Length: 176
Image (cartoon, rainbow, N blue to C red; front, side, top):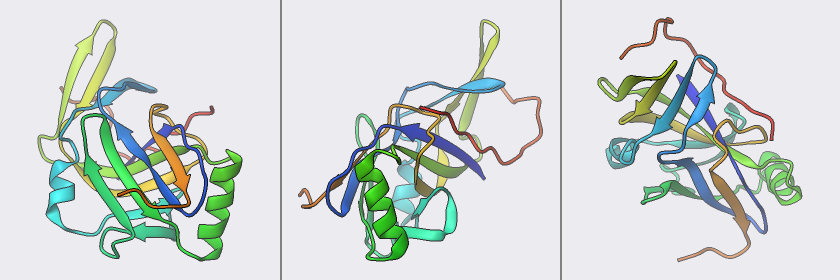
């Protein structure tokens, strides 16, 4: 499982909306750069399987799911847009307050690359990976995003080439 984080969230109310991923926005991930191509999440969304919303990638801090119809996901021209109804739980109330205060200001997502779902190219001295098809497992609300172009807003009313390293889990966080 790989994780990517993205920044820029705001708050008001109990409904969280924004972008968990933004297309064609590069992130520097240590040894390489990465961007997400339009359509990368299409098959995950169309699969109908449950995708969860979490706080800080913690499976014990579930905020919603597509299965429970408390998380809605869609791709648009900008990226992976989501709408999340926060639960009336300790974690849900805490997250709402942290988003309102600006302490939690980013989004992240956990995924596996689908077979043939990425492209690698050398640009100067830098390897660039483009994600074209991922198996999305989760989106997450986080305080430290790697991709800074995502957005999150909390609303009170609803609105109608291969790398040389071995595969591993990557926790990617940056300080805003």
